[in-house]
Image 1 (cartoon, rainbow, N blue to C red):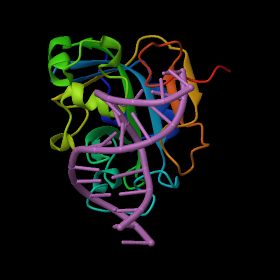
Image 2: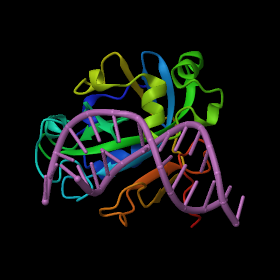
Image 3: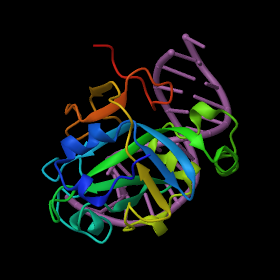
Image 4: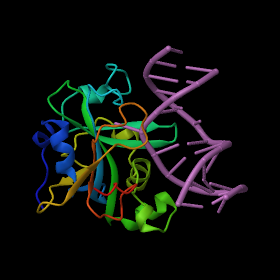
Length: 189
DNA sequence: TATGAGATCAACT
DNA sequence: GTTGATCTCATAC
């Protein structure tokens, strides 16, 4: 498998997001195939970067190809990939993964048997893969991250984003068509 | 199947 | 003090 390098992320978040569907993401050898993502652009009221830099979102304003990890609802961690030229503060939220390696670790961390629910949601996949604040600002082309390009062209579907109230109508959610590991189904065309 | 509470942190009013 | 890029568990249809 071909490793994804940092320049891959130095493009519009709207190109990078669908291109990530089908790619393989591992953190300390635990992870799988990316089946669902959402794009967040700095001009987007729903993006953390919309109102400018803060201590939390500082990584989003840095160079592309780095991980932005934040605390969600005080409970969960969520993993993003920073995109576009440095300073444009756009990122892709990784929302669901089809587990392919490290099942034992994921089950232990999640205290859950059901494979389908191990990584089907941003908070769930971060917990299963052991992603925390410690990963915020780390480069995606170096350990503990491993990111491999997809082979072939998967069928990608788009839809409206989930769980947000601002700019909720924008169709910036992308998924692998027919995957049973999506956090929620995409509406039929 | 669907709705509701609770957990609990950082940004914002 | 309120809200949110969430998830789990409980209770009600």
